[in-house]
Length: 359
Image (cartoon, rainbow, N blue to C red):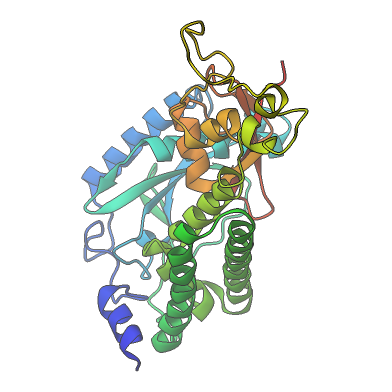
């Protein structure tokens, strides 16, 4: 085993399968902790209230995912699903799903709730949506809907870590180059990062289709996600996108410095930016406004015409201006003069296109 791989194994403690359910929440006879159950139901009530869904009938509140099965690890969330009838809100179920997904994402982003070192993640689900799970527990009725059985899969951990380490190294190489690039080289690095992100997504989908959640590809993806390698890659994509435009931006005088017609210094021989006895104000330079969001600042004061954001950079921007993610909607970001068109890409990622507002 190579030295980098050995270090990677030492630094990451991920168990793929356990002999018991998570004893932080489950008793020896697989009963869920009543105190945690009550707290999760209280959180659900608040969650529905914040989403203005207090009048919608709740058909069930379930716990699913790794913490209702034997494949939990230190990074596993408590995945709480609230089952309602989407038609109670609107006949267009696809529209309801998109709207609720956006609200749910923002609620989870703004609240950092966890029990016994495991985060709580809230989800909305239509009551008729098929939910395939080998472990499914009703918090509302305090009973198993699908009780998991102990059936350890055959996992080649060495292959899992090798695949994860290879991608981790690819991300590290891209990360080291971010500070060096600008203009065309930033565009090249941005494209490489986007291709790697798509490669990871395809890798996981192939693994899930072939061998399910315990495929080498899916387990490697979980390692990358849990160790923030995926997050680092998304940051690289956002940072290089900004550098494409930031490094190419020129002032009016720089752009026309060799033009005898457009450059006022060459046309008149006078420096229009000189502040002398008869010129009290430097009013020939457009006033710039500093904005709390660097992406908005780039649009207003830089050379970018539009900026696409996704994932955490997008939600950081929305949070600054107190805007909730809503696919299909266009919102103005405060009084910045910038609006964001929100949508989901083909992989379900939350995306937004920032543009100057047309007045």
